[in-house]
Amino acid sequence: MKKIIVTGGLGFIGSNLIELLINKNYYVINVDKVTYSSNFYNTREFKKSKKYKFVKCDIKDKKIRKILYQHKPVAIFNLAAETHVDRSIDSPKNFIQSNIVGIFNLLECFREYTKKYNSKLIHISTDEVYGDILSGRSSENYPYKPSSPYAASKAASDHLVYSYVRTFKIPAIVTNCSNNYGPKQHPEKLIPKLIYNILNNKPLPIYGKGTNSREWIYVKDHCEALLKVFYKGKIGEFYNIGSNKNLNNLQVSKELIKISKSVIKIGKKVKILFVKDRPGHDIRYALNSNKIKSKLNWKPRTNFRQGIKLTFNWYLKNKNYYKSLAKKDIIKRLGTK
Image (cartoon, rainbow, N blue to C red; front, side):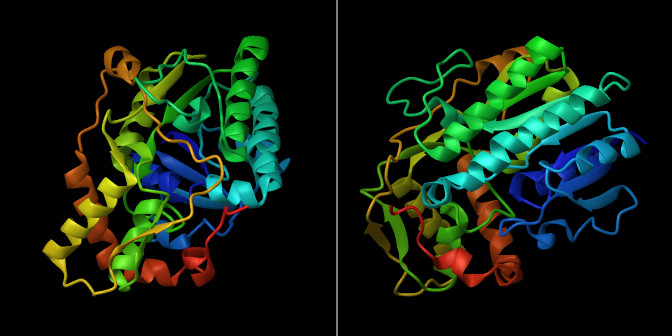
């Protein structure tokens, strides 16, 4: 059975990807350093599977080298990263350490490993590296103009990966994805936070006037795209992964209220509440994903209405997920500096 390493596999996208890989009959080694956003609840369905192993390790640690040589993976999907913009405003240092120093160590270990064994590194990044896209859609050739410490640290990691492809000929590919939503996402992010507030009869906090626009993709569609990149992607290439569907935060909130009303009786306090915007908040992200669609024959399967209903129902059936998190990480406002 072929082995694959997923870093950051206790997180949102990582745990969904592991589920897909196990279903595709891969043996998955989940490497995660276990932070506030890591959650063993996310792996409960497959934690006893004979095709799954968890290893506690920070990608900054030299232990990564040992893990590679021990398991000899045919691929690494790197999802280990600090990801929340608001937290990067409060504490940029953590983002530099994880997203730049961490990827440097991973690349060094991978470079040595691939001198002896065939493997691929799929480095998962974000559309936020492109910065504000006020009109049109950013292709893979678009310049990087990150606005937050988070986005800047991810941009740096992308550049590091590409430099190792060019200089050291490592077999690596970079993907840049739009905003994900779906099961198992930490409620510091917009959609699960809104769902938490709906389920707990609280107001729905929206930054500014709610006009900030994001391109939304259902997490399981993203994972299918990552698998396609692993199978058919070209070494050294960048692939944008998006749905081509933009909604602003106000539209997302209204859609969630509508969905929730069709499923449960919501409380009187569930109303949109506009709050002070965060510093440097980009107005719009939008990806041009024509490359992955034409070159790798991938396209998303789940429209937003389907995906948001699946997402709401998952949180409704998994209220214990919220109980597995520190309450302060759910309700505390960050990024106001």
